[in-house]
Length: 496
Image (tube, one colour):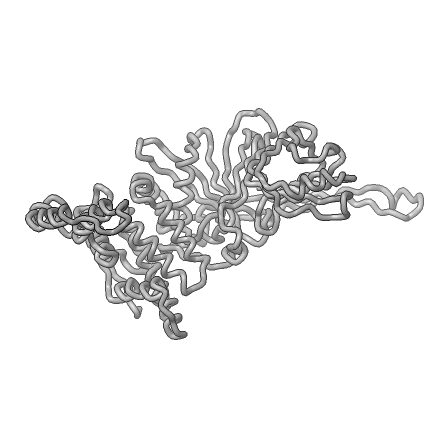
């Protein structure tokens, strides 16, 4: 991960049509802004009025191929004007561009490993230890002391090697659904890399371990985020050769709403669903996050697409970036989506119906036939009858919907089918979601109640996910002030 994207003196291979003709005299700089968005700033000299108008009124997306002498090539994708050109009229004009991605090729050497970079990482979940030896060399050269060579002579100093030892990585190893070995390393990224306001991590995949495809790597990052209790925000990837030199780099603008403050998110505590033991020496504890990653990721691979876990987690993480009164509604939407996907899956016994579909038809055959006959006899007496037949069909289909479980019944049945016991606090949290969801006006006391039940709902959400992943250990009860660790089959409680 580069300390920052800060590239100057770039040239353009494919010049966009709306750029001025004297582009060769411009200065081009690529950087990330304070929210990690990729930006390209171009400074134009001596523009004509028509060139200025072209920049001012252009509003389409475009790509830019750049080169960084002497050898690397850069490609900016999905560029869009970030602001109107500003500066002295027609001279010394700054033109700011936003880009979705930046791809850079350094060499054609074979790739030895690939590392994906993320911000909003945790600080303390690593259980394997690394030793580093730091040794600094610096030069001293004093000036303004005349011709006295003894003072002017450049001196070289070396510090004593300093060894740093501590836990900073996790090694994950499991077999996927095709019985292929999957191995990777999750490692801490030092704080001096950009951005300094957020903890960072890298996920390292090596060619000798068979690098997973993009979709599988995305699944892996989703599960790591859940077990870390915070959404890993992807910034890009770097491919390295066997000597550790970068071969290719692909950087992206974070796929997160620009109105969400990344700094605020990165400073929030982790809400990990499971309590982990952190090693105090160079011996690994058993109940670490590594243990659970090895166990749960293979199950996640099997169930993720059918249960749409990716969409469920979008709502889960969105809830954390909203005001407290809105979090419960979005959390409930995620759990309702999960319940709906479960009832559509082959694992559900009821499929969200009170009675099996065929049994319902057989039991109410006479009533259904009678309703159908009455609808057939019904004639349109209005002037506009275009939708009349469609509306009769809708009425008939509404009768069948009587057999469909409503939201509350569906959620309750979902918990029953996955064998998840819920208590009175969880039931109150589910009911509490209704007030803000239906637009009712809330007083101050109700806002405080919402905040408490949001913690219960999030714990319930975590339990449901863990249960679907065949987890049988303990979870963290965030409703309890002590954040007690309880068995997955034990409901949330108000006391210790």
